[in-house]
Image 1 (tube, rainbow, N blue to C red):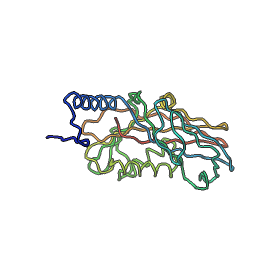
Image 2 (tube, rainbow, N blue to C red; image 1 turned 90 degrees about the horizontal axis):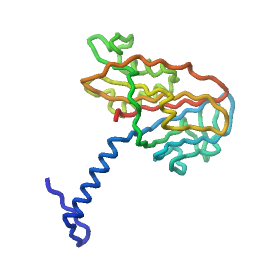
Image 3 (cartoon, rainbow, N blue to C red; image 1 turned 90 degrees about the vertical axis):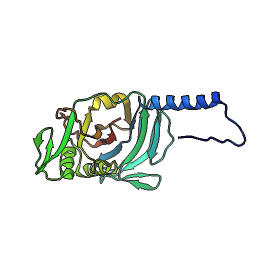
Length: 236
């Protein structure tokens, strides 16, 4: 296939073209050693509070909702959090905060998670027949079993659907990234003391699934102010 590049009346020399191609290969090579994160942050409080919340990723925060200035850090100042979970920021209301970021250090390898296989009459999870007869029911049960609320689990299920996981051909692999590993890559800090639960998963659909062990989750934290962070991203 031929490509024609025209920049005004400038003729690109073979050296320039080679440089452009080499830069593209370098970019793709760099991408192969990076990971991306796109979590939701839910704020649970017993009474109305106002807080500042900061995300830090060494290689950069690339998007936030609501929008704030970004770099290695992104801070939402003066968030008003209500007991029903709604968040007010600059006159608008949000059910959760959202951000995207990139980091050169990839997610660590993990053998914790679930392999979901469709069989006649239902679904196997790590080789054991699950009680639910639908993939939606299986995934909802797994997410809620990890400590997520029904609403948070539903949003994770919507994320899985948007990624095409539910319609994929093959086994669904959900790898759990332990909290201590997430903490090493992405920092969250709050202007007031808080408990935090982070549930990050990598997902892929494959005909050659690995052998995974059921994750062991710490107790769901409780307190007057608790952060739940959830993420479902494609296996890089």
